[in-house]
Every structure is written in structure tokens, then in C-alpha cells.
Amino acid sequence: MTVRGWVATTRSSGKIAFLVMRDGSGLLQCVISKKDVAPGVWEAFQSLTQEASVAVTGAVRADARAPGGYELLATDLVLLGASPEFPISPKEHGTTFLFEHRHLWLRSRRQVAIARVRHEVVQAIRDFFHQRGFTLVDTPILTGAIGEEAGNLFATDYFDLGKAYLAQTGQLYVEAAAAALGKVYCFGPTFRAEKSKTRRHLTEFWMVEPEVAFNDSNDNMRLQEEFVSYVVGRALDARRAELRELERDTSPLERVQAPFPRISYSDAVARLNALGSDIRWGSDLGGDDETLLAKEYDRPVFVFNYPREVKAFYMKENPDDPRTVLNNDCLAPEGYGEIIGGSQREDDHDRLLARIEAQGLDPASYGWYLDLRKYGTFVHSGFGLGVERTVAWICGIPHIREAIAFPRQIHRLHP
Ligand code: NSS
Image (cartoon, rainbow, N blue to C red):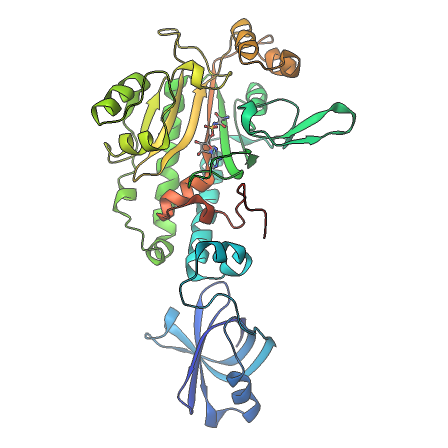
């Protein structure tokens, strides 16, 4: 057979040569015996450098010692594309250098393993919702109203209509769709002009956002724990080899089973204070607080009912404590922090309008959204799970920028 791919490594004893190539599906060792091939083939081998593209023809032979369990006894080798001085050698490179060469770095074993875990996570997300009767609704990326906060919007001129904003969330639209289809989700890229340069923030990231008619905040958390357990389980079942390649200790992932522990925001603040944090009631949990709190549990934890002043306008006021809203974050263990933000939505027209006004948003832009509370308002809840944070956690990699092929950060737009 003939296999086409790229040169990973070569070595030669002078009489016998080994070429390990990769074709995207795995590694294959090719053996070239000088006395058994035409001189041109031997010369072609001598000219190979890392990442040159080649076509190798030969006989397949099982060999337990070879990577992948087979080798190819080559009879012919054609150089398809030379690769003089491939910039990424097996030696250590700095992070900046690697991200500048991201288009080439993607070929490394580690990056290939991350890409496959990400693919599995994305497929598991789609399967989970499909199996449960959710309908996918694609929401717009060019939007006319702020979805989360005014502070981190990307705006662009939009013909005669003023500004359009790149979607921070598809949520407001899936809320409308939930009244049509009951259980819906959107899944796509979202944008935040985040000034923060943390290991948890990108300016463009993928988010899946389910929305369910007649789910309250408790139902919402139940859906989240089943969902996260399913996604992690799928990665463990289907991507063992990749997790091994990443040297991921999978035992913490094995413990990710519903139900997840739940702690109210107020209890979390008290707990954090006891653990040495100086957080005061009323402020949002910072990254360090999330890490500290999540360390107390052996699986993801829900923190629910945050102060409404630190949360978005659309969250439903808590009838038992109007200082708070019926929302939750889901914090991943091992220092990964928030992977989900979710809430029951404010379904009362006048309260919602008051929140929109209180946050300085223009009610005119939300006329359609308020309509949902005018025509058959309904209890409903949903959440958003960030794909890159989830992939980084499952892979056990320190920074989410490696969890997407071409990350977008404030200081990075190329490649
Ligand atoms: O802002 S969120 O907490 N919530 C929403 O956007 C809601 N509209 C979701 C909903 O209820 N339908 O973001 C949700 C998740 C958050 O937990 C992170 O996992 C991820 O989206 N997220 C991010 N990932 C990477 N980079 C950035 N900047 C980022 N911001 C949020």
C-alpha cells in the first residue's frame, strides 16, 4: 500500500533506514533496506527533513515493537514537499514562539491529542442534547442589544442602523426559541473584549447554551450535573489514549458523577473567609476564591444565588431574598474554576424592565425580549458552558489558549 503523510523522525544505520511518518490518523514506521530499493529511493530518504511530506509504498507487516503495531517495508518513497528547517524542533521553545507558529505547532502530538479531546467534547455536547430531545437553534453573531455587560463588547458599524455588537451570548435568542420549541440550545462562537490576560479568558470562545421552558433553577442545576458528567465520561471512554499522551491523571475525572455538591453564595463567602479569603458579601468570586472553594470538594461544585448587583439583568430575583438572584455557577475542581454560568430568567415584565433600566441599558433595544414576558410568560432557565475551559480542565492543561486551534486574546490576532 501507499501511505501519504509527513516525516516525524528519521534514523539510518547506513544499510537500513527508519522513517516514522504521521498521516493525521497516527504514526507509522517505514523500513527502507538499501539493498532492496532503487538507488533513487535511498537518496530520497537521505534528503528527508522533519515535516517534509512523502508518499511511501510498501508491504504492511505486523510488528509489536513498532508505534501503532505495524510497519511498512518500503519499496518506493517519493518526496512530495520539502520542509527545509522546520521551525519547531524537538527542543524546548518558549510559549510566545510556539503561539507565533501555532499553524505549525498544531502538528505536534500534544496539540493533536488536545484537538481530539476537544472534538470529542463537542460531539458529546451535541449528542447529549440531541438524545434528550433538544432542538438546535442557531443564534445571530451580529446583534443589536447587549447580552451580558457593556464593558467587554466588540462593536462594528452596521450600515444605517448604528452599532452592531458581536454576540457575547446567544441566550436572549434561545429564550425566544424555548417558547416555540420547549427545549433548545445554541452552540457557537461568542465574543468578549476581555481586558483580562488570565489563563481562563479568551476574546473569542465557544459556548453551548441550552434553554428549557418550565425548568426552575433547581431543574437547571440537575441538567448541568448530568450534562457535565456525560461530557467528562465520554472523554474518558473515547479518548483514553489522548489523555495518556497528555499525561492526564484521570482519577479526578472519574469522580465527576452527578449529583454535584451545592453551596449558596452566602455560605460560600463564610466558608471562604474561614479559609483565609478577604471576600466580602456583595462582591463576585474572583478566580482565587473559586480555586480555594473548589478545593474543598472532590467533584465540580455549584455556587448558587449570588447578589443581584454583580450579575446580569436577566436573572430572576430570589423571592426568598431579593438581594440575590436564582442563578448558579459551576466550578470545576483542580483550580480550573467556573465552567458554567446559569440562571432562572426574570419572567415578570415589569421587574425585567426595571432591571434593564437600572443597569443603564436602552429599553428600546429590548422590546422584543420584553415581549416574551408579555405574550405567555413562562418559568424558564438555561446556562452556558465554555468549551475551552472545559477542554482545558479535561486535558489538564494550564491555560485555555491551547484548548482552541487559533486562540484570540487581546494581544493575539495572528495566525
Ligand atoms: O458569562 S457567562 O457566565 N454566562 C453567560 O454568558 C450566559 N448568557 C449563559 C446562559 O445562561 N445562557 O459565561 C458562561 C461561560 C463561563 O462559565 C465560561 O465557561 C465561559 O462561558 N466564558 C469564557 N470562556 C473563555 N473566555 C472568556 N472570556 C469567557 N467568558 C465566559
